[in-house]
Image 1 (cartoon, helix red, strand yellow):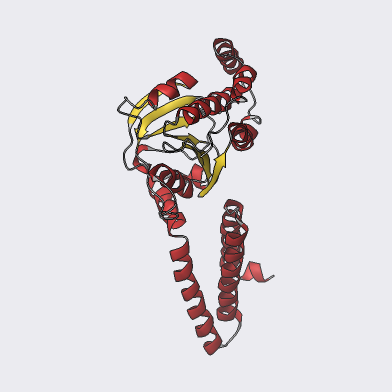
Image 2: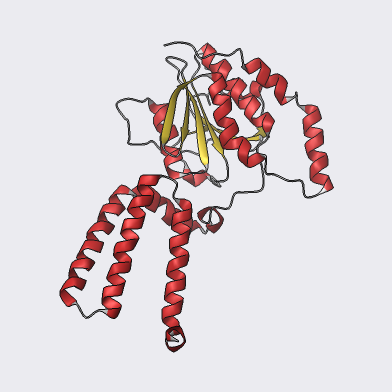
Length: 295
């Protein structure tokens, strides 16, 4: 067979297929998927012409087309390519392969505390920006300023205090992973889209979610009290408190519901934390009366 006579060709096809599968598994947007399919088709066509066909002019034309498309995609996907180089440079291959982190998993109380705090901040028109890490493995070097380490149990009261107007950390973002607050006063990279329409908090939410697909941001406008949610570089606004709960359940709750207890110690830890906290139903019940103030 042909692959026995040339094992390098077989390895080439296997590695290319694995890379293509990895790329397709990481792309969720339909338009991006179409662009990627077209680009990979051109690359495959150029390889086939160079390998099996003696067509020098066609080969040159296809190579020039692939080069032009590569430059165009580099401009369109400059944020994604930058993120890829950062992951390769830091050796964070688990994030690159899409493997979520097992530590600090979110639960129902995380959604309840976050939704209630956002609703109360919206009512009082106090600006807030909360980053929820769902497995992106955020590190201090990913931010413009890493802020102040907190490493505390998540609660509504603590979030309210961190965004109080008379505290030094209220202008920055709060980073949450699972049921713990990791840091506060974090300065996020800004997005370049919608500069004329959005304020600094909304641009920061778009910027961080553009670079990290396993990351969402809850934003409360200081001027109008409007609630917003940023996910994968898209901003949904305005939303009500009940809509925020539904979105958080879809984005956070779906992944946390798959969590299984692997040892008796971990189950005891979850039971003790559940006894120390109020039930999520009671918190969500309070949150139902929180409505978004009208502009």
